[in-house]
Length: 437
View 1 (tube, rainbow, N blue to C red):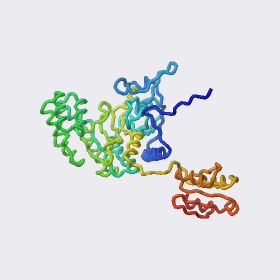
View 2: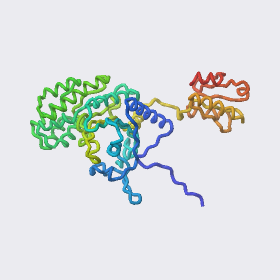
View 3: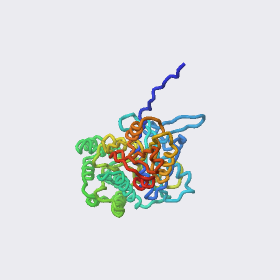
View 4: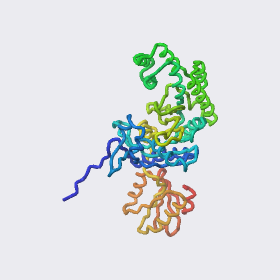
């Protein structure tokens, strides 16, 4: 009986790229990695599967609903939902072997059983950095993070992007001073400002039970705009004596000062009093990065300062600051928006060596020389017409072909064909290496 053929397909929300896209994706990932390492971040690679009790120590909420959880024998296991919870476990577990402040980066896949929709994935790459302090952590670290975002996105090929910055203490202190009790819900309503407009926001705040005076103060607060210095001046002029607000304003001023010291141009960052981020997690500076030419994508890199990374795993207070780039979603959205120049290359190979007769040993020897010189090379071993061999190079987008026949073997002078111009040159292996190496 013949084998039954199973239709090849992937699960919804799980993505795989064809070679040309995968090459472009890997290039983005390498750029991010190089930038993280340039700033002294150390790689960490935690397991994809964690004990459920560790992953769900915080418990409850949307996270628990979306986690992939299963049992194997007596073990209760879960796929990691993000890279932050595994980091918390890692730092708590290895605290005595780590040096603080601990600067780590991790690039890896995470899993969320989200509702399947275009541009949202259930398996996707995140690229995180975090700086963790033992007991305390200087505010200057909060200013260094935007310089890393600036360096990374510039290297990824973007000129026009804005890092939006705020401070949760400013928000919390302001709400306390305005007598707002339900801060979470108020923040969620303010967050809708760009979508629904100020009048609708005011109506929702009224329905929430806020007084006219409080709503007026909130409107005044979110209307503060202009340059970073003008926003800081506007906040100062509110004359709020609340202790948390005053501390938040000091932190924000310091962060702006040091962002400039790190060399981030003013056009690439701004204070944005509307951003809140991770309402129950971040405690100080928060970041969201917007690509100005692709605003529909939303924030492409976000994060912030938190007071205690590993409170569920250790009594030791571990403050930190970090950001995350959702690489799979970013790549998908940019591809959809036509950001990538049309690339015909589905390979990394630079040179295809084509033997014209049965004697492939000489071709292998030539390819070894090129590889030793760091040139990505492959040999075409399959039989067939010469046109078919050239067609292979053309379809993959290999830029050069070396043709080796009896004459080339006898003279040690090879034929190098430039596949885009059609030009053919007679060169030695050394001359080829000098030309294209």
